[in-house]
Amino acid sequence: MDFNHEELTHSIIGCAMKVHSTLGNGFQEVIYQRCLAIELEKAGIQFVREVEMPIFYDNHEVGTRRADFVIESKILVELKALISLEDVHLAQSLNYLEAYRLDIGLLINFGARSLQFKRLLSRSNKSQSSGRSEQSGLRPSKNFISLSSSSRQTNNSDSFSSWQSSNPVNPDPDRV
Image (tube, rainbow, N blue to C red; front, side, top):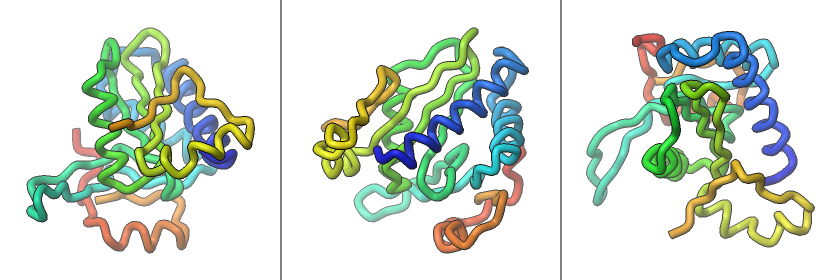
């Protein structure tokens, strides 16, 4: 994970902490999603919400999945509103990270008494950057997980246009 990604994930987590400290736990995930969108916008962080992606098996489309957020075309953010995160939520988020072909992700849980988050690193990024991490002095925190073995656009930018052109639009991202 390069410094820019670390700085950006730090800012995203800060926005999530603001939402959690204001609302606490106990709301539906979509409420936290809408509030996080407000905080990201206030922080000047570019994002798209509810990005729909096809899922393929043996070259056959078998379904679709919507990511809660894709931040600056670089970072996948998955939100939960659960009492606690389980391994299945990590596995699911890591699979989405691979499906979206992104290197970095965040799994954020608003449902616990304290905000929970995990930084995620894709398998391809891990194999490409295993040497760089030590050279740059960056060390994964205990909240860092790596893989081993429709959109509603906010803050338009050219970098999103090319990324979004291959993704279908979700007509109602605020649907509960």
